[in-house]
Image (cartoon, rainbow, N blue to C red; front, side):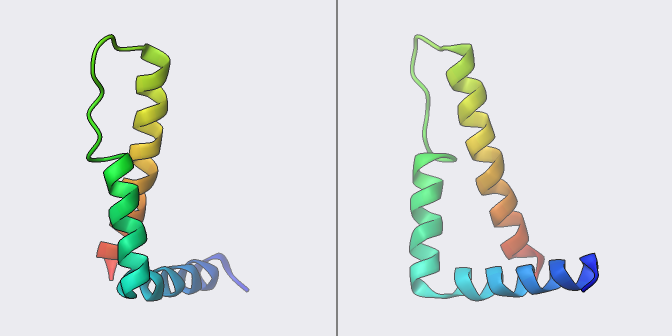
Length: 68
């Protein structure tokens, strides 16, 4: 299997998941604990880096869903 075929299969699986009501609920939850979460003072640099990493993963998941 080529990398392109593997990526297409992963994308199709992902699209099936996020189009399902349970998948949408999972994405809403992930957004609520990452993208929609606001850090409050005092700001710890390590925590902010950790939070940004989590946000970037969820953003990539959203980007994949929007690709189709």
